[in-house]
Structure formats: structure tokens, C-alpha cells
Amino acid sequence: MKKQVGIEALAIAVPRRYVDIEELAKARGVDPAKYTAGLGAKEMAVADPGEDSVSLAASAAARLIQQQNVDVSRVGMLVVGTETGVDHSKAVASHVQGLLKLPRSMRTFDAQHACYGGTAGLMAAAEWIASGAGAGRVAIVVCSDIARYGLNTAGEPTQGAGAVALLVSEQPDLLALDIGLNGVCTVDVYDFWRPLGRREAVVDGHYSINCYLDALSGAYRGWRERALAHEVVRWGDTLPSEQLARIIYHVPFCKMARKAHTQLRQVDLEDSASGRELTPEAREAAAKSSASYDAQVASSLTLNARVGNVYTASMYLALAGLLHSEGTALAGKRVGLLSYGSGSCSEFYSAVVGANAAERMAKADVEGVLARRERVSVAEYERIMNLPYEAPEAITPAPGEFRLKEIRDHRRVYSAG
Ligand code: CAA
Image 1: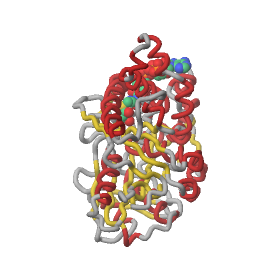
Image 2: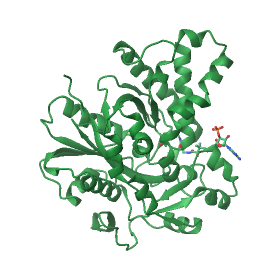
Image 3: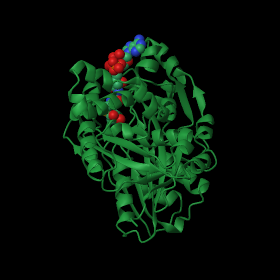
Image 4: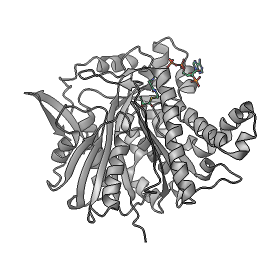
């Protein structure tokens, strides 16, 4: 029998503070409905300089190990996917290995490609295990980022921060990956980037949305071709994408998942015999189907609406939200996942939800992690955003979490709670 490989468990970490999105809209003189209905946001995580991608990654990985009782002697690979690296050379993954006192006998590295780095890391880990090279060992992949565009920018309401740690193994209690079916698409574009030395991303916002949708079409068509060949989906009474129980998208802001789903359906309709019989207007209306969005997408967005963009971790936060709310109902069902990293690389893959997903997610306590946050005013959020990154405030981290304490002689020093 073919080896099953995938995600066994996950854990999340978020900054200790957040701002209410309607309050932010009012402070900017914007109709709050633009941020809530127009972008789909509710709350936005606010990371202070002590909460960098290392501390968030270490906190998520420590929580994963503690909640799921991971035997760390079996971890042979630790990958961090991040857009927000802290050094041009030293890997975030090496900090995490040291902070968590993990065994030395493991491969550590970072994967960087804007928001795609986490999926790049997951596939490297899964294929390492599937190939047999892992020899029974497991991998931890952490997606950790601070999404930052700056005060009073168009991107401001689409900021956020956090980390999701994934345990990858031959016991895929959350998701068994359909290895070999993945569709990928790379296009050399300048839609979102962050020149060396800058804390804020540069983004061509509306163009970036079009780049995402174009890349999605390429990646999805690649997956669909293989999935049809392996009879995982078929052309029939329903579209191939409708044969997936849920589709989880990269979520830079929640409304983007709706745009992505419309595009995916448009691709299926354009390529199907029944869709080609429709007028362009009827095809567009069928692509925009709210019933399809409500059934296949909406339930994955609850956590993202409360955290904001988390770049590499956004799609995995959506996965956490979906399995937290629907783990039992989805057991044994196939879902699709679309990862997009600006620049750009995108990947569409599918996976089957495990029978123990709900049990694993109960241990992850994702609601509890969000509930422990503190709501801050817009004035306090602005103060935090203006703090110099090299001088973090002296705050004791919560038990089991980590914070950047200081930068001494260009070395980052962390404290543990
Ligand atoms: N009530 C309800 N809705 C309203 C409204 C109101 N009063 N006013 C505006 N809206 C709606 C608009 O109609 C629009 O919805 P549609 O797109 O469905 O038409 C939505 O609110 C946003 O309005 P605008 O397009 O006018 O907003 P904007 O120009 O100020 O900026 C943005 C939006 C481009 C997303 C900007 O926030 C941005 O640049 N964000 C960062 C870039 C980004 O997230 N890109 C996503 C793709 S790239 C990627 O995915 C990688 C990554 O993670 C960065």
C-alpha cells in the first residue's frame, strides 16, 4: 500500500494584542463597511518588536510539541517558511532549534518566497518522508510572519501576524496529502516585494490581486489535469472543483478567498462542455455562486478574520479554522488547498481529512489562543507600530512562549516564559 504522508497535528501562535478593524476604519475616516464587508476583516493582530518571526515560530512549535506530546528525538527536519526573516544569513529555523533545545541531529533551513515559503517547506518535508529518506522520522514545518504595510497605507487594514506549526509524518491525522497531484505555476512579476532593509512591504495592491488570480488558474489547471488522470475527480454532472468538500485559499484578506473561488469556478466553467454552452454573462453568474462559496469556502475564514494576513501562515490558519469547526464532519473527505506567494509561485494540492482531525484540533485550543489576547486602542496600535525594531519593550513572555529581549552586538537574544 502507498505510504500515507501529511499533517499529523498543528498549533498556532499570535501576538498578544489586536486592534478592532471598525475602530481602525473610523480613525482613518473610512466607512467601516469597507473593511468589514469590502475586505472581510474583523480584528487585526498587532505585533510589537518583541514578537518577531523567530519568537512567534518558537512559540507555535513549542506549543505543538507540548499539546501533541511530540517525541522530539524523532524530528529529523525543521523548516521555517517566512517572508519576515530576521537576518540575511542565519536561519529562523536555527533560532527555533536552539530555543526549544531540539536535538542537533536534524536538518534546519528557512524557505523564502513571499507567502509561498510555508508550502515550499511542507512539500520538501512531505516528499522527504514519502521518498523514504526520512527513515521513519518526522518533520516540523513552521510558517511565521509579520504582515506590515505601514500606517495610513491602502494595505494597512490587511496587516496581521502569527505562526502556524505543522507536524508532518506518516500518521496524517489532520490531512493525508495526495502527493504527486500538485499543480504549480511560477510567473516573474513585481506585485508585492520587500527590498532589503525595509520593514514594510511594497505592494501594487490591485495588480497583486490579478497576479494571484492568474497564478491560481495555472496551478489549479495543473492539479486538475493530474486529478482527472488519476480519477480523483471527473467531468460529469458537477464541476471537478465541486467534487472537493472544501477549498482552502491563501487569505491575504478574507474577501480574497471569495474572489479566488469565483476564479476557480470560472476556470472549470470555461474548460467544461456544459460551461462553454453558457453565455459569458451566465458563466460569470455561475462562477460567482454564493451557494458554492458558502458551502465550500466560508467556514475556513473565521480565524483569518480575527488575525489578518499572516503571509506564509495564512492558508494554514484557514486550515486550522476549518478543521476546528468542521473536523468531525469532514473526516474522510477530500479538500483542495491553494497557496500563493507573490513574485510569484502558486501551488494547488489536495488532501483527505483524517479520522482523528477533530480530536487533534481540540488539543490545539485555537479559540483559547485567540481569547487570551488583549484588545488595544488605535492610539496604542500606532504607538506599537512606531517602536524601533531593535529595542523591544521589556515584557515577560507568557508561559511556554518566547520574546525578543534585545539585540546585542548584532545578535538576537530571546527570553522564554
Ligand atoms: N462598503 C462595502 N464595501 C466597500 C465599501 C463600502 N463602503 N467601500 C469599498 N468597498 C469594497 C470595494 O468595492 C472592494 O471590494 P471588491 O474588490 O469586491 O470590489 C473592497 O471594498 C476594497 O476596496 P478597494 O479596492 O477600493 O480598496 P483599496 O484600493 O483601498 O485597497 C487592497 C484594497 C488592494 C486589497 C489593499 O488593502 C492592499 O493593497 N492590500 C495588500 C495587498 C494584498 O493583500 N494583495 C492580495 C493579493 S497578493 C497576495 O495574496 C500575497 C500577500 O499575501 C500579500
